[in-house]
Length: 397
Image (cartoon, rainbow, N blue to C red):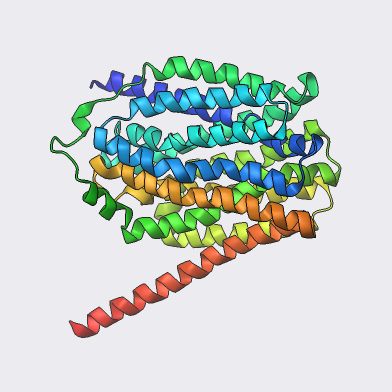
């Protein structure tokens, strides 16, 4: 592949990734308030929000294993775009809470194909540029989330609750067309067949399991807060629907900046594990502060600080999950990683929804803050155990 073709393929793929997530996130800020407006209580809202993660938990690993076994990624990407578009159209046509639950579940199935996106895109880069590749595609995702979520409240104000779903469906159709033209080379795979037991050993890799566990906690935080109940909290604080865009902007801009800087500046400066510890510590503090906010300005400030803290985590997780895994087994590793962290995406909002129903909306933020503290605790314990093991080995030698 010539440098010109490589650049073109990367650009097309980043555009497609942007479209995929834009269509999935254009309605996120208004989903929780919309469900409340049509009669859904906090528990049901938690179930709908959690169904997205549950579908990913169920489907991501099978998609990853099947992709490695048949040695293709592109069909999964096309399938993901089709289901994502179908999800938006179902939302637009929905006239009951049951249909809305189905639509959000379809979005989860679509998102489960992201494993194929990340692995195919990483194949466009050399091994030494893996973190750069993950940073680029993470930035594309964050920008899609930012722009999609920023325009959501404005679209509702202008054309009604269903307008973001229709727009997501239209943009998703464009993505289906573009997905037919992305490049995939079979030369990236080894020639001999992969044995299923080899893929199982990949899923049990200790480093992968540690990163996946931490990612459960990080996704539990973000899907309970910004992608969950933060918009509802903002409306109860007195903001208008159109002002939700400012809340999104204050969170997602720092989030995007941190995503861009994480691999290039912060990892060389702090190291991977110290950076994870610092970011989790900060996000635990900022999330726990949410119920104490009484003004718009303070809400924007806390969202910005929390967005930056969380933004350092996700590209770091992506690189760490597959950096020690052979290319031909990476879809399985990525599928395992993404399936495991999806536990946080469905359990976090579900538990928070139940807590909010029985105690009040503040309870969900205290719960999310505790997830960050748990992550810091486990990293301290792992660090202590590794240090003891190293000291023992030195004594034995």
